[in-house]
Image 1: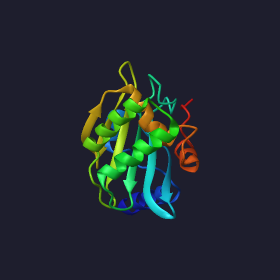
Image 2: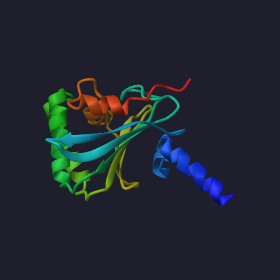
Image 3: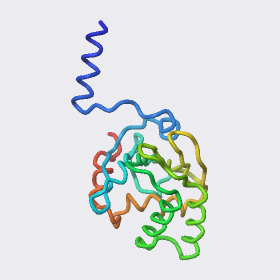
Length: 182
């Protein structure tokens, strides 16, 4: 029986079946499923692997009141938290989201929240849909901080999910299976 079970698990893994989401994702996104994943590279260097987890309502944009999601980044190299915050701020500027004053406040928030990361560490952001949208950040599945600012949440996730993202191939990979379930 064990041998049969091991064969089934191996077969599912080989054919791309996805394991259950980590507990912290399941807590933020009921019925969580992997919508898509891809890599972000910069001048040929692998920076991180991204995964987008959605629920039964799929991805409906960062203004959705009913469709929470989690975007998780697994870093391929050590990075300074301040540099991660600055790169995020730069992307928000390129997208033209928020006012300059908002972006400066968001930069300060990200500099306070984002830790230095080592290779293979994960930072995740959970979009909290609803009346008071916001984002909860995690480091390796442990809560880092909650930001209850819907404008910030929309601007942050726009970096990867906006049609105007500077990483359109990664965006397409993340949204590959993000439609609502029938």
